[in-house]
Image (tube, rainbow, N blue to C red; front, side, top):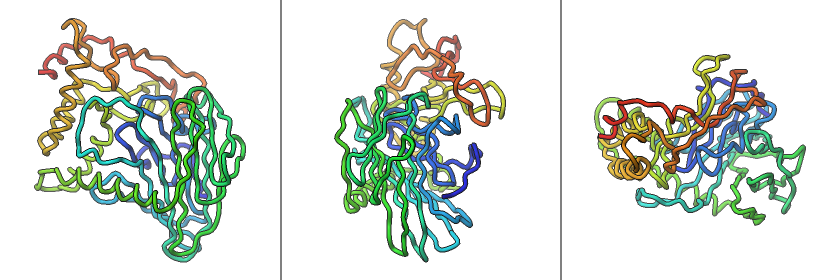
Length: 367
């Protein structure tokens, strides 16, 4: 397995998402942050905030010599290429998105959410390990993990549950799941984590053809979205990458945009200015959506306008500087003293008390 030092630099994380939530992936192939089903839900994998208790989902070969990463151009599909002492393999990570023809609007029904990962050996041979250790409610719940078939595991605790499927046999180890094996050039290992709703114990079985189709659909969605961009000036690829990142931070059912997909990553390592940014600030989102608008993304701008009209309805004096993704007004802030924090930066907070601040500029941002 890849040796990953505790709390890698924040800049080492890549982002994938499905317009409902996202996952942060380290250079070691480890998902150290993911909240499901929404950006502001409690974490399923939260090792970035507590290395011992937070939970993670790692896929990588052993004997790593070097690592390179890139996004497939025009998409938010992440590729990590590992060169090992015996071969080369590429890990492709994505959260499936079905193309809705870029229609934005209020759709709060439960999404069909998965994290899909495929490791493909391109030369030589590699030995790999898949380790999945979900820890619900910001690491406070160690779920019950058990088999539902040779290739599928199920973990549930409290209100959350996930299924874990792998094309290799899955073992239950220490309240989590483990799979390992060898790949030769041209061979692939697929694995899927799916969020389960309404206490469902029906875990899906997958096959390579179905997952390959999901990958093609997701790449197609992002490429179609990128094709809308009207900017043709200097540094177009950097501009488009910024636009793709903003799109990935959009909560499609409402049109709201999170300031960041994380909570409690510190302004200064070891400091206490660690806030929850998984909400929509009117000022920040207005600037971000204006940027998308001038690039040709009118659907996102229209959806945000509709979200803003919905969230801000009420007396003028009650206007807030920020709201929840669904228009929630009370965003009560609490501390989680049991969490270690990113590189021991405490406290870890969820919620944000800034919702009650009075700032006159918010009226200008609305206009």
